[in-house]
Amino acid sequence: MTDYFEIHGRDGAARLGELRLSDPLTTPALVDGSIDDAGSLWTDERDVPKGYREILTVLPHRAFPAGTDERVEEAFAVDYPDVDFPSAAVVTSETAADHGADAYILSDAQGFVGHASAFRDEIIAAREALPADTALYLSGVATPRNAATLVYAGVDLLDAKRARVRGLQGFYLTSEGEYFLEDLDELPCSCPACQGKRLDVDPDDSSGGPSSAARAAAFDREDCADHNEYALESELATIRRRIRDGRLRDYIEGQARHDQWLTAAFREFDDQYSYLEERTPVIRDTELASASEDTLRRVEIQRFAERVTERYRNRFSNPLVLVPCSATKPYSESQSHAQFHDAIQYRAHQVSMTSPIGVVPMELELTYPAQHYDTVVTGRWSEAEKSFVADALRRYLERNEYPRVVAHVPEGGYREICERVEAAVDVDFEYTVEEHPTTTESIGNLMSTLDGELKYGKRKRQHNTVKALADYQFGPGAGDDLFADVALETTSRYPKLQVRDGDGEDDDGNGGQQLATMVPQYGVLSFTLAGARVWADSEAPTKRVEIDEFVPHGSVLAPGVVDASEDIRVGDEVVVEGPRAFAVGRARMFGSEMVESTRGEAVQVRHVEDR
Image 1 (cartoon, one colour):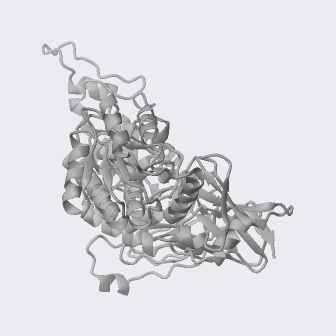
Image 2 (cartoon, helix red, strand yellow):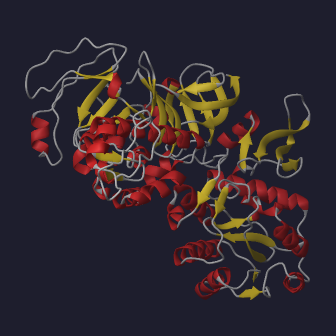
Image 3 (cartoon, rainbow, N blue to C red):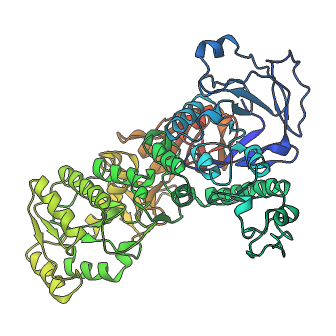
């Protein structure tokens, strides 16, 4: 149980939190000035410290370096006392467990930081063994260059020890790397340590270059240590901003390039999909930047492709028309897609092909991240991009049957992807593009290819959109299961569709009880209380949060959660049930975190009723 640490925001495994001292620290943060070490039990027996509310106290401990035999760790394990002040316990990745502390220090950090696979294994092992609402602290390893990767992995607290030591050794640190102080021609920083200092030129130096003596007099190693700490603090401020914006991964993909082990580290974490996926929100309103092939491995991209190819089911009997994506999002608002629409005229089901998303059925064009990404456009597809999109299209066609497939795509990457898939599935592709998809000849070909096909109506289009969103959000077949006992009606205009039960009555006795609304910002369904009841009573997979005997107003806090579905993710629609209340809202924690945590908002409640 933690009383002094609370998580306020999440971006994958990275968290934005608060260490609740007398002068609160917003994490991730440096903790140097807010910590007191009660000492090692290796050297002497130590009493439980008095502790103070103002600082984080490291309880008496025995630290073990990396590689210590498990039997030694077990033989000298420490029984940490229960205390009523902010406390930290020292553990290793192997001995990490709940000791009732607010923070946990990994004593073996210096043995695995710098080794990508070991770093991945040890951080994941510790993070999954420790309570979800406690802070993870790595001491003596942080630099401005590696801080973002440490936080991305799940670390909350750092210190400036390594950065200061490197400064005293004559190394000038930046977020890109480190430099020998003697090799600097100028100070590339305006922090307080660098401001007003200069690298003097020795007038007796005939080469005109700066002399070591002059530099040392103007900017010495103590100044360098101060600069390194300032640089680390500045980097953490940038990281906190990125977490708030939900864009730490965008930053990591560039920042980690400055060191090979950092690049390897975030790729190793990409291979641990379950760890990151559990902690990654299902919806955001921020842009996802695709600037490298590593973007293809992001949780948001993999999750979308997985749900489209494993959950989504086509409900149209018309042919499939494959079209290229557009720079404008959502696609339907682009000029090119407006031309495709005019040619198709609801005679076919339109699916867009794109890197890095894969394939996007028209019903899901608003669903995160389909309308939230931006990518580098060069006209050239890498082999990784072609393989990814081809695999997504192949799996999509294996799951969904169409009478025929029309590929309205240009030569190059799009065409090559279609040809690969055509060779792998039992479906023939018809190609309609001459030179460019929007030329008069190409649009004419598309129109004539669909001659004789019957149009589907507005009602069918809207119903299929609502069911497709349910499939995507809740699981295969959810769209049919959710509305199996409902006279499904849709009102209002796309993309703000309202879902109603034509046989039901609303609270005022009017016909057409509202069940849900389509949220254009994220492309998901948001339930009313009546809709939540239909969902809870249906065969569709339901994400449930069980609470104690109270009626929530505004939020359900973690201490009130009794149990929660393990598949709940941040941003998910959830049903909240308890002895005294029934509610619906949006998850602010993932499922197991709700159950484990003793602080923080678990569910943002939208509608609630007393029982």
